[in-house]
Image (cartoon, rainbow, N blue to C red; front, side, top):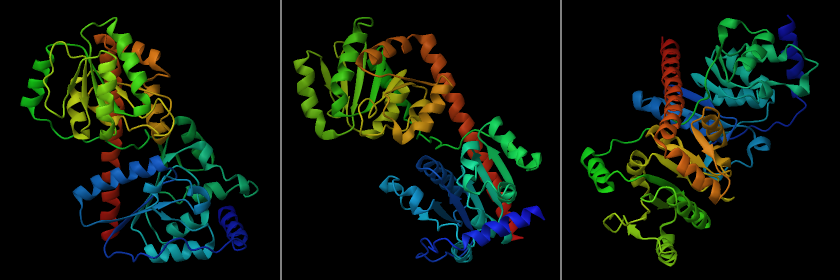
Length: 404
């Protein structure tokens, strides 16, 4: 009874709010529909990756991506704004939203719970999974005087995967059955590198003739001088060291060649077919697809677009999945959760400037160091892949039951 009173009181209060319906311009497609809700841009990227893998197995499915109401997501990057904006948690707006889309399964990530919307989904008997439940995102602070509202809302989910044991304990203490709650790693974009021709890989390694190699990927022009200073620093300890310098903007390649010549660093243009000689100190590349070759060849990769503010960093998981130990700068706002997870596992190391980058390259090129970091990275990647496979099976099982 207390449970229903809490929700009834919340709904009564919600009627006084704004009645914005959200975005329902698109028609609801025929067939089964999986609803993915993301509370952060990084979670949306991970859900899009999950949906892509789901659709590979079941191409007849439809998917719907949503993001929080405009008041919470207006500063999201533009390329992620394709996800439909949820309405404010007004009873009429949420009812109209659910009637329009009527999904068959819902995957909700994080917190920012909307009790009216979630209760509407539960009343329509839509199976729901709460993924990546985080304690500090679950609090319904504005409605503390409705003590059962959180339990009412969480109990609408069939399964709750918490981000940590502390978050799982918080969910259980709110009154949720332990059988619904478990701890899981965070959902992340699962790298899926393409196979590389074995002949080219063998040939490249033969050309390198056992030289130590490091890669600077997605390097911005504002980072060039720091990368080259770091390379000079590392050359003092590793005299045959080769830097593969991937330039993010191909238009910067020719000016960079002139800079290398002025610094007396001997350069080979990989894109132009230059041979890598024993005296070559820097290999220039601008082709993004070739990075998967260099990740395989270089024991150490610096993920550029991260030393200077502005670019937001690059996703490191492909490099990690191909066995390269990762260094990165402090400006990785676009992938902060991924880097934090790798760093906490000992699978990536942060550097703040050219000196730290040079020292990091030297340290990680020691075989035991590179192997240790690469192994930790592989464990993070495989853990994420396991969760993706588990979720695909869960979604498919719930869809099969809905179809019966």
